[in-house]
Image (cartoon, rainbow over all chains, first blue to last red; front, side, top):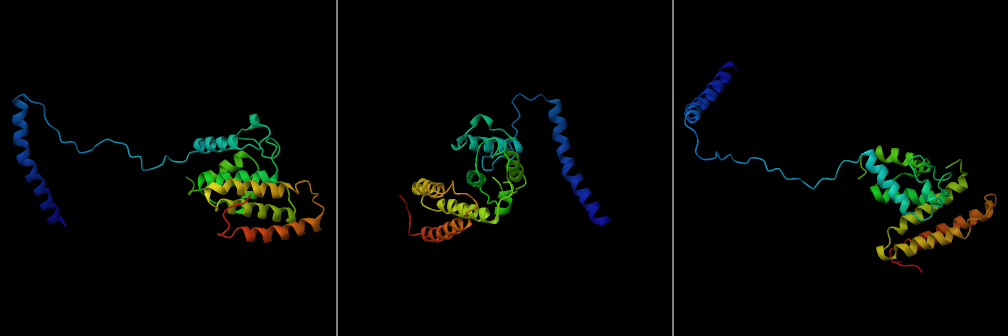
Length: 135
Length: 78
């Protein structure tokens, strides 16, 4: 153990030692040409991954989806706290359809018993937020 | 949804199945299917929920028709 670490240190010292000499020299002699530094990292953006699904994005997408749904009698009442039945004037069948649209939008499947519990826009956002598979 | 009876839940389950299977049909005919499901359910939208016998009959008919139409060989509806 001790021996191997000693050997490693010796090796590090050996590789460092020859480096030191030219560096001190170049510090004295001014460089007349720009130092070429090899580019190790290229800073370009990867578009292969989708942005993380935040609450704001979920809210925005659900509200947009509701605005496109044409059975809503009171489109100006669409908000986060809106109740599908009381505020938006939807019946239980429309509600099923909205939930189906949300399923397609986020490519998940909501089981029937959970779908029955969604009464407000906020419920839907909470449910999507709790789903790790939603995209 | 506020306290639905068992029968109402069955209707909603059938509706959900119908809409779901509409999304399995070819894309260009999807609207036909969704409209068809809408119109079929809308026919009895005003049916009082106390008419159990009628609702049960319609559910049976609906299930049989759903099974028939959900076959892959049926691609479009008018």
